[in-house]
Image (cartoon, rainbow, N blue to C red; front, side, top):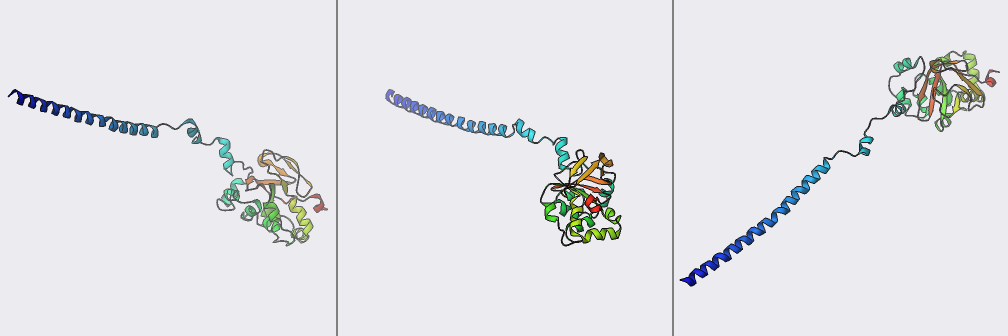
Length: 239
């Protein structure tokens, strides 16, 4: 009887030990699951963390100077700029459209500069083609409008057009190397022709020799354009 009780007690003890062992094994797996949850929470917190200072700075709006540089209409001057915008509100010949192309190409798209475009492209005289030259450098271009050419007596205009050397002299007298903004263009400047053009005044009162400003500060891909109301004549062409 006592022997049987000892056997029963021993079996119960073994059973308890086994049960405790299983419980311990079960408990040891829980931390692994908790660690995984904690890692997920940390990853979530990192993804939601605020951007660093450098990232925040990159998203700050452009300052006023940068905005001016990116806006082709920012530096326009001239009493007729508004009329120009109304006549050519959009498209390749508009202020924004001209900014996309080199100057000879841009002028060819402007309906106010058709005669000038014909003169520099060889259309008026096949021996005078300045398109590649004008598109290939950095220039300030004084651009007579169609009305400016129309004001020249037909006989005088034909005389210039038929003489390739004279036409080249007149056209290159309207071109200055380097781009100049409206606030720095006043003064005496040597032209591609070799002669000196005198620019006086400021803002809408700028005068280019005896030509008045129509609208200036018009940007193209490689030049700054000043549309004027008269064709400039170098001294050699006037003689």
